[in-house]
Amino acid sequence: MKKKIKKLTKDLVRIPSTKDNPEEIKRVADFCENLFPKKDFTVKRFKRKERHSLLITFRGEKKPKLFLVGHLDVVDAEKKQFTPKEKGGRIYGRGAKDNKGPSAVLITLMKELSSLREKPSVGLLLTTDEESGGFDGVGYVLGEKGYTPEVGFIPDGGDDFEIIFSEKGVLHFRLIAEGKAAHGARPWEGDNAIDKVMEAYGKLRKEFPNPKKRSDWKTSLNAGKVSGGSATNVVAERAEMALDLRFTSEWTEKKIIKKVKEVVGKEVKMEVDVSGPAFYTSPENFYVKKYVEILEKTLRRKPVFEKYPPASDARFFSQKKIPAIITNVRGGGTHGKDEWVDVKSLEDFCRLLEEFVTGEF
Image (cartoon, rainbow, N blue to C red; front, side, top):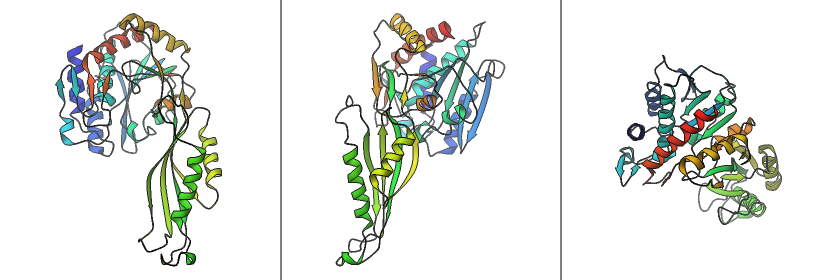
């Protein structure tokens, strides 16, 4: 099992399936589809906006009890990061932890389960758009395609088997202001659009002061990009600011958008690019408690429950009121130059997940 997982992790890392590379996105989907012979599995392939998703089941179920969810797309990286290296019990490479190592475990497990006489009610969903928002992968399959599992399992959050029970919602939006151009020496003759955007941002910053550390669980706001004006000595006729707001579960998407519009006022236009709800699954959920029992028995450790600021595909499960378990193996350097995953952790994860799946589904 360990050899299979290691080899598959490295094979996946070698495919540079970055979010803006449709050829490699297709290639990684083709590669994974070929791992599942049609005589043993029912494989559904979905394509939306050049994003490919695979749904593998044993009986073609529309409502399997469990969805195992992994993503095969990665963020951009230098060419050398797509050559996996193994050192000190770790595999280094783009996507090793996020999310090709964990996906390799899910694939290996699914293939192992096919040998059972009584097949579990489980589906494996592999997507290629998580780094782009997830709308054309998990969002599409749970939404437009209408698949409704009882619970989702997503190894894409936290570290070293932490269990993530809450993630913030995400709102990416732009503030746009129009003004009137004039000579920079005669500002009274113009109307500066940059001033309008900055004033609106100041109001938002006052309304949503940023947390100082991870445990400070409140809504955060980041100004990621500002553009506007044509020259230093010209009053800016137009300005735009792109912002990333992460909101806690006390807010709904509708309420947070309404609040932002109220704060910035009518002179500045708000355009939403991406939005998704906050995620929450109670630690007292039936499936979470069962998973914890098996975690304690298999790995001989107590569970660690955490909140996690980034958003994941789990929010689409929350949208459908479907509980989900978020966790991940031991690793580091996610989205960085030295991304790595611990090999033994992958092996432990496969053992743990096999116990969970065969025991409950």
